[in-house]
Image (cartoon, rainbow, N blue to C red; front, side, top):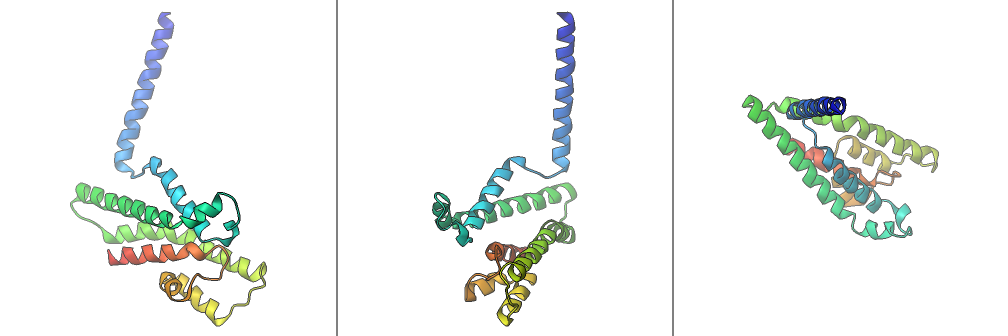
Length: 179
């Protein structure tokens, strides 16, 4: 029985050490894993809202009507996270490096964004035998210049498959520039 107690104490001390290591690491690394579910929900609502594929799917058609909630939720989460990041940086260094802030945003968002645009364009050309008309080219410029939210407000959603929701990224990038 004494051997079991010793093993439990050793196990508890390893767990405690691990928890303290995680706490120290979490102070250095900024990440809230509990927000991942909310991020996915926000993305899913926006995605379903912008896709006509889900118009006649039970339950998803109802979510389609309320997809705008996902945009608001995503913007609120983004605002909280980058504000928290900037406050933590200021508390640590007594300054804010906007260069580092923007580089973090660029490396986090831009690669997958541009890959997704390439995927949507390839699907449009290959699967739908889409022709790259003047309108599509202008909209592609809007996507690449993070101004598609303005085009969407004026001309409606972009006709590239699965790319209708990308106006939100343009809006967010413009907000970062404004900040």
